[in-house]
Image 1: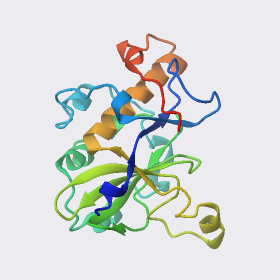
Image 2 (image 1 turned 60 degrees about the vertical axis):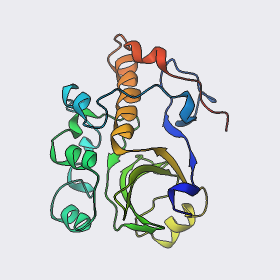
Image 3 (image 1 turned 90 degrees about the horizontal axis):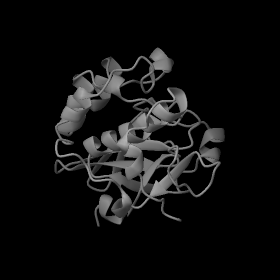
Image 4 (image 1 turned 120 degrees about the horizontal axis):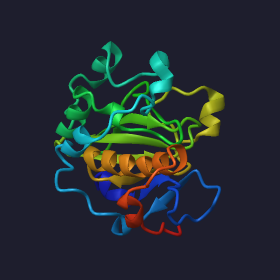
Length: 217
């Protein structure tokens, strides 16, 4: 059985203002794939993201050079030879990261190394600022790709104390999106609603009406 075939599916996201959530104090909630809004027709080519507004407070902007970002010599060395999907390459090389914001101060961090799994590798992409949750890109040796979530910092060299606090076997992995483009769109939508409602105190846009009820598990 391949790595992806053995994973449960679900969309892990922030508690979106106005959307049902299982707990008023939950940092993240989980939705079933069948309850999610339909993707736009142009999701794969990221045309929708190119049209989106740029932001000074984009995802990870506050961390500067403190983390292993998507570009630079260290990133190039880590990604060398990895068959990256076209949507991620377009995002990384197209200057699109300033379209994405994070209500929980999440940030891009490629981690220390790739994680070898059955049929491919996992590349750590995003950490929650408190390491509550992590998002990784699965890159298959056959050219397939997907986005995976984890409640442990996969791809990092951990101290004994950190390894005890975040055991890899605690929660495993979750298949959160079938492509990087799908992941980026759902992330953008949920966090855009948060910023419009909470930060800018403006119209949340019609997206809010399309938010589903979360899965009870």
